[in-house]
Image 1 (cartoon, rainbow, N blue to C red):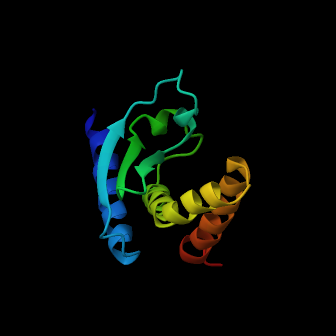
Image 2: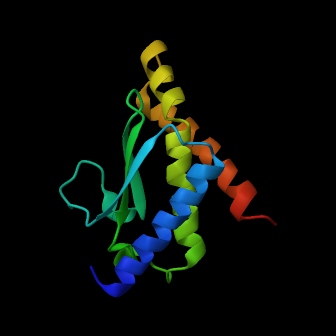
Length: 132
């Protein structure tokens, strides 16, 4: 990892830890992993700055940070981009139980659940990061 990639990852991790504390995610064990996406992955993570995988029953989450995201972004890296990504991933963990229960108890397809989840997270992002 280059110095810039390491600095981006460190900033991301600090931001995640800040939002984890603010959102009260102390019951979760959260691991942070600098990652170079595999193009052959089912989800095309190369387009994302970060993504999270989790086991909500065990309260265990792995937050992946794309160390190559500067190479695929059209605009320059800004600290707010990293902070916004960190906030987004912590919100994913915040609603993880709700998403699991919704999927397991109701006849709703996973894509519809994800769309609703991201609508909620984007509203929160707009409230906190894009005050106009």
